[in-house]
Length: 502
Image 1 (cartoon, rainbow, N blue to C red):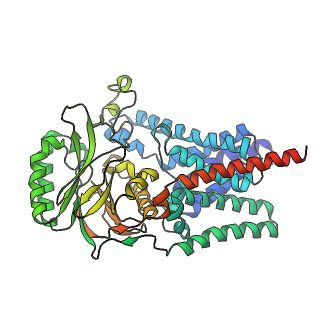
Image 2: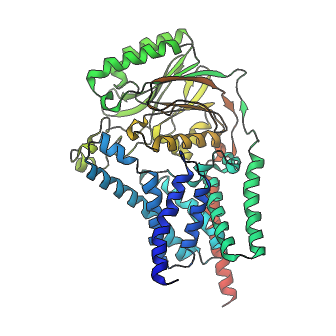
């Protein structure tokens, strides 16, 4: 095949392989597509130059992010009031910028990792995981579209309580590398070797799945009610509708009092707590009489008016306040605010001037049990959730995915929340404004869920849990450190071999 045809094939194959990652995730759940995408990427990077690898990695990233996070267009256009052209341009720039990390992955792999002993088999997945980890914190982080999220229900889910989503991403990436290398070799000995590696990882995960890492903390489960108000985003922050919104909350919630926990979603009360204290106290008193903990999202203002938080409060038979730590850029704060604020409507979204909450906040209290709270985007940060979960008996996350309309974003968000429950061995209550609200057990399985875009109430039971999974104890550190050390060891072996042949 000519060089020009190879280049054309790579130009087409790279973004298609990247789109395979999106297909592996919710709502499509075609999990083999992620493995196939990794196999194609390994093939694309197997012999090319570092410069070509960077271009092919960028193409893979364009396909992955362009298909997987293009839902940001909805928030920019529909709720940020940007024109279709401007919203499309900003979305394309966002996806292209994220894809640069995949370009750097391709260049680094071809330049430094591929030549090492085992570079194509082990170096590829080790480096992939490190780049997923890099995305979890670089420029505040965007920990979305990890390979491992597609496997909350497959055999390898058994590894999640041990190594978390990064361990699953490693298995997906090495599975793709094994498939490519077996195809390239086509020799029985090599194919057998790769088959043994795959069988060890996949069957090992199936063997691990039944293990109970945690135990129940209560003789009886807690009853939970989640109210999903489905308030249109267009009117939520319009003061004219405030009395109607809080009236709706009160009317719909009265029949739900008597459950152990009642959850309202993120910013369910579209006013500062200090302004809505009378309304909250009235509902809280009724909740306290019926031994119900009310957990709601509500903006919070400090006494001096210098800081504004996106917060959760527990009241009624519970207590505590939590201020969101990981804010969404442009949605909850504007980077380079003095330069950007006022340029276009997107930079002036309602409630886009929040302050980040302090680290290491105490859990909420729901009766006798500790609850780790997370607001919206925070549930996608594995390390942040692990820190909170190890100090709590169950978890609550509230969200307002209305910003992303009828897109795949909220369904991806729910799948990531399932992974956090599985990693940490904790039941998870998820309350949203317009869906999907859900109750997830400590194995990451959905016990009950709501439909989207309807006003509804969801009821069920959760089990407070004691003990910790290995991941809950140590977080991501062992896997990330193992990836670093694995690459260092490969380099040391490479240098030793080079000296022996010199």
